[in-house]
Image (cartoon, rainbow, N blue to C red; front, top):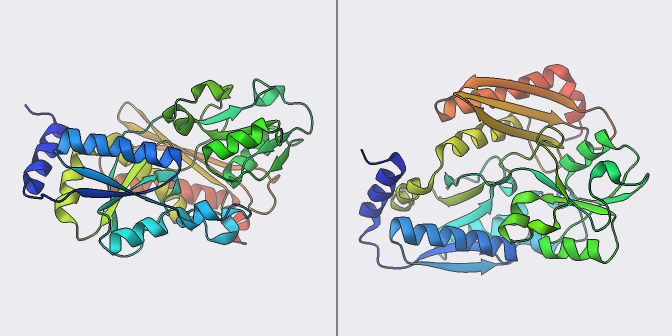
Length: 327
């Protein structure tokens, strides 16, 4: 029997076999984004037989570095220009860090595939200290993620959290220049760029619940790109696909935005998908975190969405309405 993924890739290849023009990937121009796009390019060439080129772009999210994303439009600023390139036909698909993709895409766009998730954890990066516990009282930690802020303060309320924007290399340079005692970054990005040596320790997913979709790459296409969408099914990793559906459903059910300090992460335990989520207060980050953990047998997207909605309902029952009132 041909494995499901191989069958899907073969079917996709047959559908687009007549396509002679190169497939264009729209990507941000940061070093990490280009690595991710090149990674997808290699997969498309190897598994789908496509000729693939990259279209590098600078997004508004890359340009605005002096203000928090939550104040200027959210993480959607990282994908808008890429979607415009798709809409205008200058590109055929966009590669995103899934944690940066808004929960609801604009009309006419679809998330066609999600690749197998890399390390979803958050990394503690410091030149002088080995872990969060070893930081001195009042240490300065850099992050612009509200999700990380509320979880850091839940463990170390004495810390001074300062905003940290820019691409991965810029953030590391600010640490090296002495602006921070430590910074928190996604482990996956560091590992993808061969910078794993900068990681002093990783938070467990219980200590610091990741963002929905963290560590996974999402491939976005136009809704009318049927042949390409079919081809991309050969790259879809179904366990990750269902897990991120559940995670993103939590945020969607709560009206998720960049200004909501929400964490959601799902893992497979045998046939059960176990989802944990935490919500903090957006304007009072030292308020207690609201937590939930639930599980279900998940076989399709509808069941994954239902699990996420169950987690959101539990958070609402725990008082999420008070935390969300200002969003």
